[in-house]
Image (cartoon, rainbow, N blue to C red; front, side, top):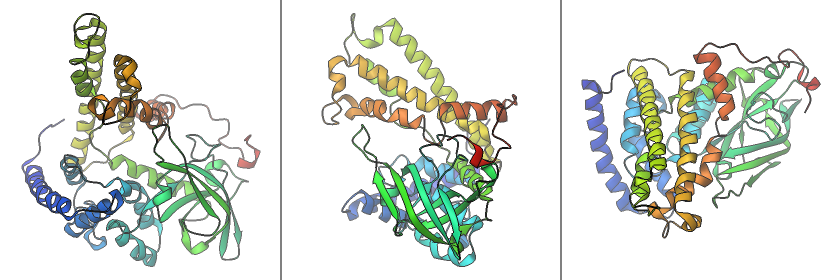
Length: 399
């Protein structure tokens, strides 16, 4: 594992840093009506310079660069207060799937606007009865001439309430095992019969949604991949998540260390309490292990390799640590821990935010249990779990 940039990577980092310093200042000076307007303007600025999707081919508006260059730019961009999260799912997962499976006209229609931030995409996979089992989809699409008629429900769809389009995985054949009867489509989220209901979170936000489909008609021309071969398409979508390599954010050991120096305890400050110091040491060791694991992935990218399933380790550690640190900090604040107002709470309510958001992070993108199975089977080579539904027709499975 190499922690240092190569000379070429160092040159690229310096170039990216210079570009960001100049353009972030210009971007902020423009002034924008709201977060979305600011995000669209920043995305368009990056696209014009070839930084919006660094690894995409130049003929599609990308930078024609390498994965490690994308990581480097992401690290430098994270140092600046700019908005770009609205486009992460679309550009990281949805549009690459469209590029891999759609016809030329469809790609020409959608890739450019998405890259420039003019259109936003979401991913419609999860369902109430499916949990982390993506293949347990019950939303049904039935062929009707040149169209498919879709009925069903999706849930936890991040960003659907501000998205223009989405990729949709549905059941088209219930007479075969669950992985073999799925088909992928792209659709306009303003289509008749699509109803999007934001889910109110305890944090006060509504970042994800329930999406209902009632007799929604989707032309067969909007199909991505072959009929009943949607699982293969979905795997391409999910594999693209592995290139989203970067540092964690939010409440970490450094932040709770700062709090511990300021909070009174039985004797002196919280930092002087032996039990807390033991916790702090554990968190610090975890963070260093997580940092080294990320560096191993970055090193693989630097060598032109593709990150593997070991990337799942990072999410398990980071999400659980965030929840643990948040809970410990709020408890240490005693009665004041219930105050989440950023204007009043320590570190602008960072720990209260962690308490409310970390449980969701342990579910999003695969629960802890699913990720542990992936690590056990695909990294450690342990025997896979027994699957009694492997060869059964989906229609015969219990709901």
